[in-house]
Length: 423
Image (cartoon, rainbow, N blue to C red; front, side, top):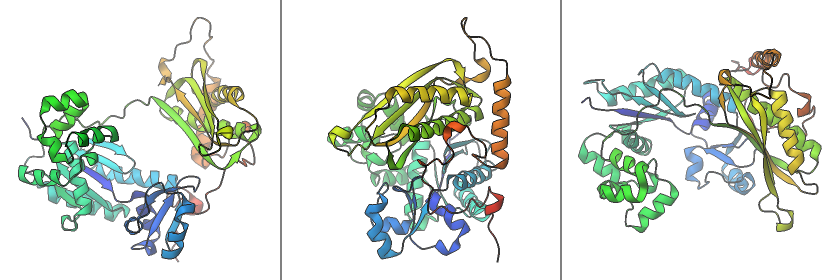
C-alpha cells in the first residue's frame, strides 16, 4: 500500500498580506482589516495579535489601541483578495495534480506516490515560489493524514526554527506535537465535543490519540472515530479535487445605520436577490425556493427586538434575477413590521439543482429562452465593465442603505483605473 502524504498550505494573515503586497511600507507595522461595513475586525497582522486585539472586536472598542499604537486600518477588499487567492491556487496546482482548495487562503496538496521525494525541501520550494510570484507568505504542514497536516501547519506557523515548513512523520515527533496541542484545536473537534472531552479528562490531542477507539466511536460517532484514526496516522479523509455542488446561496448584510423605511429595505433585499441569482448562474444552478430574512439589533430593548423570515416557493426552479427578486420582495412585504429599526437583512436561495435538469410540472409552461439570453447579456456586461454597471431598478439609484467602505485599498489587479503605478 502506497504511503500517504498531505500538505496543507495556508496563507499567513491572508487579507493583511494582500494589503502588504501592494504597500511594502506596511511590512512589520500593525495592520488590521475590517468587515464589509467597517463594523468589526476580521483580519489581524501578528503585530496586532500581540497587542491583544481579538478577532471580531468592534471597531469602536479597538479605537484607543489603534490610536495609541498607530495601527493601519483597512476596509475589506474582497475583489483583490479573491483575485490574489486565485493566483496562489493556480501556482499550487502546478506542484501536484491532486489539489483541494479548502478555503480562500488554504489548500490541501496530495503528495501520495511521490516516492523518495524530500517533502520538506519540496515544501520550501513551494513556499519560495508562491512568495516570489505573488508576494504572499505561506506556511506548510506535511503529514500522513489531513488532520495531522493541519496540526503540522500550526507548528510551521509558530515555530521560528521551522522556516515556514514542518513535516510531521516519525511517530516520536508526532507524539510531541500532539501533546502540545489542545484538543479543541484539532481539526474536526467542535466546541461542544471539546467540552465533553475535557469533562472526561481528554485535554490534548495526544489524550484523544490514546483514548480507546470504541469509547471515541460511542461518544463522537463516525466523524469522531475518523478524527481519532487520522491522529494515529491512518488516512480517512480523501482529497476532494472536485468542488461539491452548492446546497444554498446566501447574501446578507448588517447595516451601518438601522433601516426603518420599507422602501430602503426593499432596495437592499432586491440588491441581495440580484447578487444571489448571479452567484447561482455562475455555477449553472437554479433555485427552487427563496428565503428572505430581517432582524433588528439583538441588543435592543425587548420591545424593539424583532426577527422573522419567510420562504417563497418558485413555480419552477429558476435563476432569473427578475423572478427571484419579485419573490424576495413579496416575502419581505409579508414579514416587514413598521416602527422597527432593522439592523440586518438577507436573501437565501435553496433547493439548488443544475439548470439543465429543471423540469416544468404539468401546470407550469416551459420558458421560451429569452430570459436566459437576457441574463447572459446582463452578466456579460457586468463582467466586462465591472460589477453593478447595470442592475435592476428595484435595487435603487442612490442606495442610501449601502455604506461605502471608507478605508478600502484600490483593486490593484482587476480594475484598469486602479492599477498600481510606478513613480
